[in-house]
Length: 525
Image (cartoon, rainbow, N blue to C red):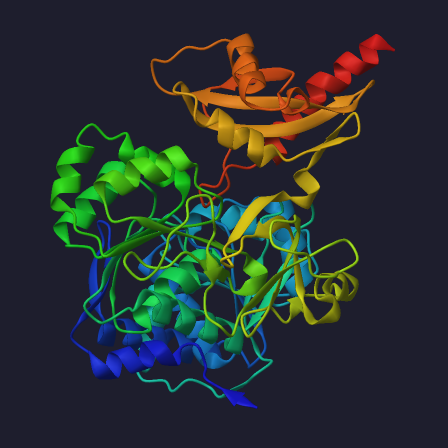
């Protein structure tokens, strides 16, 4: 069955609004839809000349940039598979991914060329071509193609290749916070429908202007931001890295109607010295937070000053958006909830350990079914079968729903702590600690304990100028939670480790704490 190539929504925008601004990029300039489409088409033509065929993998190892978007849509136009990667990956990680997906072309920068070449040398790639965005400092080397030169000498018109429903458009590797990265295969059908559904949910029009500083390689950025806005010829204002003041200034300068971010971004903006001045001048129509549940104090502080943020839930395997709270004025927004299914075509349920539906209020695993759900994991048939069993995507997230059909994420199944036989959901403890006036960031993790199996540790970064002791935090928790849920230990950090999207992550914390507590356990023996 033929479906729309994802790149056609950019083609449509260029036909409908050729002279409208499509992209404004921090310190780089701006491009109309016609100019973006011409760059994308030129790259697609260049890729064909480099031998790329439908179904081949093209790795995009670039920072967020105009060239990233030209590359992504250029690859999609050819019917090849775009493989966007985090620019911060190191040689060992790249070698694993290159061996797994076997890219025919790698588009990258001189700054990380040494990492890429080392990764290729330590993998099984044969005749992979490298395209560099810029070639400063590389002298007379001729063993790569220069991105800018390819754009200059190739045609600026290229009609998107026809694709079938199961043709993979993007191969997105999970962050690896749970172990070995898995290549999530999202088809053109997955990507198109999720972007279309996001635009429908947001009621996007060509008048919308969105400010964003998410990393472009992430599904949240590609579908929920780029797709949502460009599907209806909206304008993107992008920052390579998040800076609270720069994003607030962009919202003000370009009269933004939307901002997409994560909780840590909203928190940073709320702590800007002139936040109330900005709030009086910025008139957002809607804003979106995702990647992790936003603590209620941040939600409430933002909603006092700006249009209420709509919180949602998604995962790479689902294209990524699954649920959203309604737009302001379009329905009830519930704090702590990740909302209702994005559209009726996306089915969401909660299953028990026997894969049977549970009643409202009961905690189980969140499962998803719909046109947004991935084709599977590359080269991992057993994990694909387990994750997509019985036609449902098993997310690994513990959740429940209320009588109104709103969903609430409780925690990751694997993050649950078992302390002396009691199950503890870290998020419940984190939500409480976030209400303490001295706390800026918190993550709760379990560590090995010789007596109780696991013990609870709260890892905290304090607000600037605030002080609090370990015992005060423990007492605060015991006063508001069952004692078995309260942390036994508190560890303070200047800031907590985060993923590339700004989401707080537990893996690094676990490694630090396990080293400390396992050492103590060995000493006891």
